[in-house]
Length: 446
Image (tube, rainbow, N blue to C red):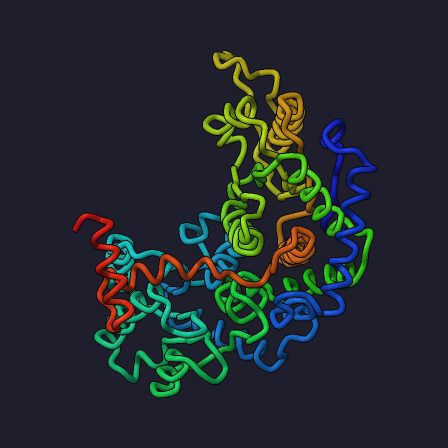
């Protein structure tokens, strides 16, 4: 089993009887998912995706990745939310957060269109200067503001540098199969296209072309990635009594006991973007109807020197889920020093991974003593298979947890609120926008 639940640090916080009561509800949620008769059931394509993916497109992704590797120094991935978080998480988990700085035979990969910062785009353009560039624009509609602006800029850059014909060979669009402004633009200009499936929401899309093309360009083995997810599907789909269901039950049990904030912790910086992906997955899926466990994240031991005090002695409305990666392959050891001025001679010769594990154990015990329950999710290693398995574990647990919470885990109606205000303030045409603009400017005192 690539992913295993460890409940050692939950003693005294929840009883088996309390968990069993919630498991009656999570078991119903498992059946709802299996029968596909719950709210949002038209977005359940992710369930069988690891085995029912489009094999022809999968091979086309591999070929496109090889073409991109040979034709550019910089690969720019344009997308926001689920359109970039999963890919970036996979690359940093499997390769390194220092991927661009490492010696390799694959292009540097930068992510754009996830912010409205002009500084970020200016800096990216300066990085591209003098280098060969390819772009993957990812958007189902093509009208989401952040990636649409970034693509306008990068398309102009490529057309000025290579001409329209040259740019055509360097732009890859991942979008709707049939409709939308990006699909229209791609067809008009002859860009190679990949599909965002209709029945897979953005935050569940890492195992589609949305994530697979950038992951493959980074030199990751996407066959192994899908194999990990397929094995997780076999272990969890439609089955009760699994660690995946148990995780959903425990977090809901803690929520009902007043633990409204879940902090996802890991002791490796390469997990940082996986935690960001997890935050979107759980935040968008559960945060609605006045309900939801607030998802936060930390990287230890780094954040023990900043957030550690709050976790140890702050308000007791939090619990931690620690991802414990058993083996990373790292071999760095603490050197000996005859002077021993730092007083660390007692750990000379030990590997940093060994020291890191003791830090995890010490912290888990300390936080439990401070009143913070710890759920531990053990992962065997740092590779494509483990990442694919973990992705499916979290996706299935999120769906189970959302239904147990009593919400639709697959919609995000609240995301549109800020967009309506922003479009009005920016002067988007339309009577409704004009009226909203007047009201907003009055509230702003402008």
